Image 1 (tube, protein in one colour):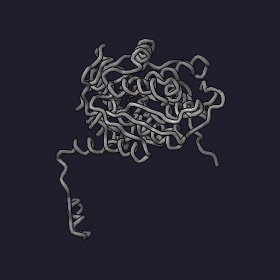
Image 2 (tube, helix red, strand yellow):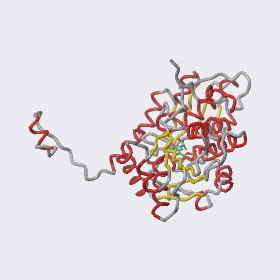
Image 3 (cartoon, protein in one colour):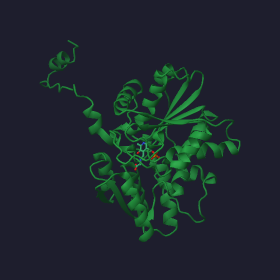
Length: 353
Ligand code: F0G
């Protein structure tokens, strides 16, 4: 029997790996591309959802982490560091455990979900909580990596984007061509840059006939790319993308502009609404940061944007179980239904009898 080998082995010829790089993998990637009757119906387009929450640690970060960690370890790193809103740190901690190097994580205090915190801790990371936001954490992590023997694996590390670009390869491999439109959430702006890199590299080598328009969605309270300026105090319920000064700003702007795409924003209310609607309509539970892409598509449709006849891919970046507190908090009308252990009682409560 054969199983998916992980993004390094599946796409090795497309990755500029230094000679002698070991492969530290959890067999990430190879994630489902699920058709969306609901969104296809709303748009008149052929809409596919790339479910990145199906990666080993529950987010797309694993694609970049297998490459960044493998290269860092190949170059002799004994410790790795990242700043994170929770998913990068969860992923780094897992891959560091596998590669037997020491993971050091900097997170904004009180601003990452319990599930993501648990992942970092259980995998054995040293977690430092910073009285500040993600942007502060990234600034400190960069400086730590400059001054001390610890390798930085945030997406400013180019090998992160190399790994993450494989998601675009998978989509083209599956659909037989690039989609017309690609929709995704944007925080630190690494992922949109990585997808664009993947699409353009495949296109250059004749693997696709077209390049997609890249539509990036930010949370309104953390939308520097929409406003065109740094946001000092980013705020959003979508903690994954609570970022005011994205590291890959220029690459992301280039991706949007070159592709004929754009950045727009959605409110927290739209994000939580989209999270619920996607879960109910398609059986796909994503975290709020991921739901920003779906919320964005819904907003475009409401605004009369015409997507009819096109092929669209919507990336949902992280699993809904990453942040159950936020998910449950939206169900304010939730009432516990408790019954005695009798069929009749359950049937009555369920309205069956
Ligand atoms: N969706 C999720 C679930 C994320 O965790 C992130 C980023 C993004 C979208 C945005 O991707 O930064 O490449 O534009 N999370 C980072 C982290 C910042 O630390 O986990 P991006």
